Length: 415
Figure 1 (cartoon, rainbow, N blue to C red):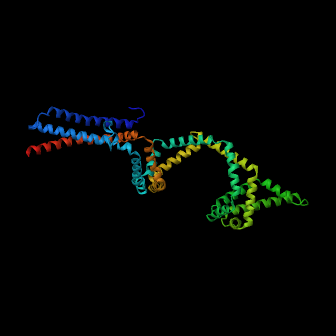
Figure 2: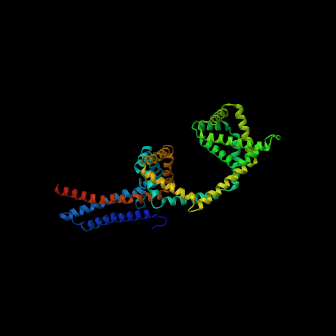
């Protein structure tokens, strides 16, 4: 095998050499027969002689035609030979145009992806041979390595030099107001309110003495202590009951008041100049605190360490859960035809977008690659892929030439 030749190219080269040898053997055979029968121009040997002579002519003519595509026959600079080395640039451009116009088309790509059933195949691959385990294992290793190479100084520089200055310059009050409006419209805040009410009620129950002491300390100095305790206990019980009532009643007045206040705030953050200005000043004051960047870096470091540690545990909760979810996704892609169809559609849309916007740029890889080759290399590469089939032209030329010679000789004899 020549150096640098792939296994597939080695097989092609072997097949090309075998077909060359066969075509050359037929030419040599025809030449031998012609020499042996050249003194016989009558009888059946005359037919053999005429057929072998025509076979040689056909073999040589087709050898010349095939060879002229890739090089000068016998090294002679005959005009209109070595066509591919001389025209490799136009050949690359034509091949690029052919691929772009006939293969990199939206309808072709969509049809191919749809018929291939990519979504279902991905699902089958995920559930077979523990592919999900290997996918999570490799992904975890890559992600852990990537996170491990992120330096704290780089994160701090990103936050201090890029993120915080950008947030200070950007007017965020309209964005916050729109976000609040969307949250309130979808009632997405109710879960957070319920959580806050539950936690407040639990804290009040668990800290009765602290709350009572706070109320007692606010009582006048001239009231009896036993009265302060009773009042503190009563107030605590009333607050606990009030908070519990808020948690039980979806349309409680406190909830309605909170919703109205949030809606007014959302509108003010978008439309009221005074509120917008106050919000922006508050934002700048908060972001100007040195603790903001320091705390952000510390939070990032804590998160990074936790992620790296979790990703490094082979049987850890994070990797186990990821493997389970990927396995379930694979099963759903197999069973749920609608889901696999959506996946195929999404992939088709992405591929179609790429083809429509970058198809011709992708196809330029062909011409750019061909242009980097020299003429001989281009001819050798193309001959390696199509040369074996072209040898059939030589073989057919030998056979057809011999048959034509027989017909011509027979016609001449009859005339």
